[in-house]
Image (cartoon, rainbow over all chains, first blue to last red; front, top):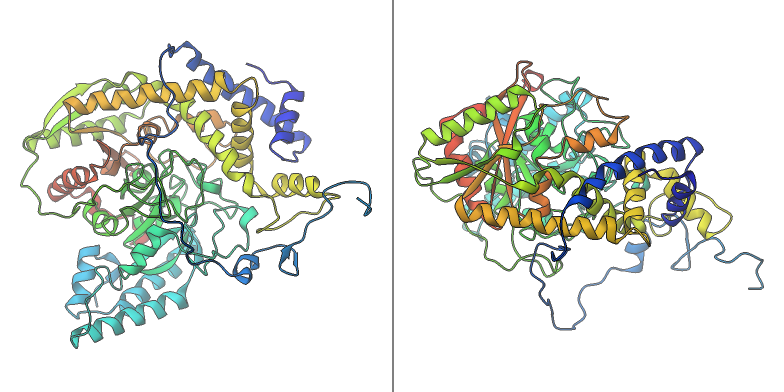
Length: 100
Length: 492
């Protein structure tokens, strides 16, 4: 199992990670080694085995739909890196100027 | 005056109840010891000296009012503890050992912490951790590693290494930790303290910053199983804010002790004694098992055949869950924000610049394992092998009551031993990962030392929700042994 440079760059884009050249090189090596090791799982016969996503038996957890305590806007914006008029402020989502 | 920091949890609570000393005396003693030892150990990311003293004063006032006939008294009133920095405490920083949460102040308190506050504890600060609890040494903390109080050239283990070191150095009698793949038990083992990793669902995860949501658990580290039980008692139980928290009743974890281990069936899995493990670890663990046999337990070798798959199963499932959980850290609502031309740039620069190398590695690994075309071969297959591993445990617990095993193949590693080889580091986790994958509880405690004087730990595992049997067994063992009373000179 050997990841190509392009695959590593593709994963980084999917994960929204800006990686430096040396990081891409290192992760290409390291992830390839880890995935190679994980190949041992392919030898396990799991034809009729159900996957486990949680060790607890599935159950429905319901409660009355009643409003409870909520955070104030002030509390929630206290950690925001940038805000204006009780809203999170972000750079443009779309390219191409302000007429969008 | 005697050194209050050296007392057990029971002695601290008893001393305050008897009026021998106050919570302020005790809290000041802890803070003084922290101030003296932190330059060498670096167990804490945040120390709330003023807040702790105020909380201790309030605890003392409440006790005084109670003496005048007022109200009932919370069971842990005035007891100083520390909290791992992945659990939120309202008004305190919560960095998770990451630059991406630098400056973040928690807007609410995690349920297990709130329950302990309701039980009367005083929180002295937040302890160091590998970034987002990803690691086994605290070397992945963005704020520098914690050092092992037994020998500062060695790691304390991780990811709850700050909590383990703080307890080992007697800075606090108990500290909260979290365990997703061994992060309570392994540092407990490396630092010579006792640590409980509860069953999945026994303790609410509300207010714990999520790493691997199907594996995460909140536990406690303390100097003995009894001390851990006294604190854990007040953390466990159902919580409306965590749908995976169990509605099973919480039993007493500190019930009166039997004289011996007569009738207890202990299974020793042969897959946990492997080539290449440090001989002193195997020797100490086997000696402890022999001592349990001498105390009346029946010991039998058992087999957990899928143990060797724990590392690949865990290192696909946990990173997959982490890659989804950590998507929320994007520089928009909290944490620092790197600049960018547009929103996508901001995401890329903030995440690329503020996450550390191990966190990025696991996000990459998880993203790959979940990506189109690879999902079935990696994540899907890992989930199926997880089912087989869980069946191993179900079958074993039909014939034994507890499973006894080493916690890690070695004692505490030196700094930098595996920093360039992540796979080698992952392989060190082979004995702790299965309990998380199967959802069973585990209790780690000291059973001796290697030739270099570093602690050796062993773990007991039981059926899901049978923490009571683990506490009881370890307490009987600790009543007959004194490994848990040994303390490092560093903290002496």
